[in-house]
Image (spheres, rainbow over the protein chains, first blue to last red):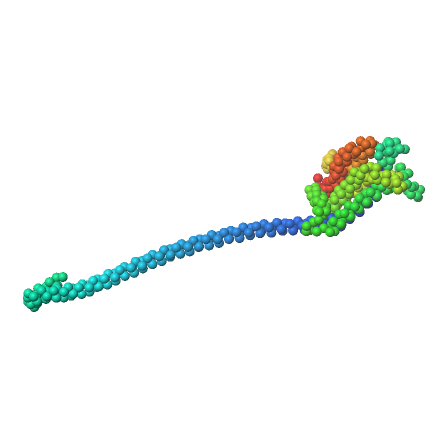
Length: 156
Length: 280
């Protein structure tokens, strides 16, 4: 338990170890730790930045999608409107065409009827005259009763 | 390993034998082994051997890691060592606010080295001494920190650093002022001047005791704890079969002491040096 030379030996050993640690152990280790700290800090910052960018891009994409959706709706609307208008137009066209044709048919039918009537009239008058002739050849001559017969034919 | 097993040794002899350093000393121009009581020119060979081996172990281990240290993904071992670095670094930064390249490595060296030396306490007390006896070494004390010379050697180095730092931060005048002008400020005018020398003398006595108490308490705290712990291990080793549970219990408790004492020694060193640098 005496105080001996060991004490000085230990002091020297300690100084040597401390100096060694100071020169060769502490600085490189601390440097490595510091470097890692900056790397991590940079990484975190980059991550945060990326997150912000992502959010911004997301928002942008959202607005673009919304815009596109609006435009699409508009287009569909327009198409619908145009479709209905086309249909309407076609229907109107059809109606007009039909009316025109019906009109034409009416006209044709009228002409036909007139023509047939004229013909019939001629024929009836001819028949009437023929029958009257037959009767009259027996009773009277046809010229005496011509006016009565033609009056009769025009009344048919 | 009870007393009975030692046959020729009594309990007292067993204990004394375990507490005896392997010594070599200079007597009349010759190196003499183990007859060195009261001779200052003595080397405690076992203390020096283990302390230097453990110091080299610390230096080698940490140097290898530091040299290969990568700032990328660390190996598990590097991560473990880094934890110690970070721990020391934050402890030092919390306490020592001035800038210094010495304090942190000093604290690291003290902490790990003292921790290793204390850790030798957990090797069962008979293993290394008995092995040494087999190869002809009569005494072997394996825990360097149970040698007061070792703890004193370190605390004296710390003491020198305290003085160097005080002088560097405050100058020689400041250092002398620190020793003489506190805690009672001497009067500077009037009749009080007559009393000034006495007050200065009083301050000086008080402050030098306080200054000397720092290394003394630092070394004796560590020495006392480790010596007492070692003594209890030796006493437990005398108990025959009952030593097994007792030894286990005391060893578990000692893990705490080993770490705590290393930490206290490191922390107090940093605190003392911080006090040396800072203004009061």
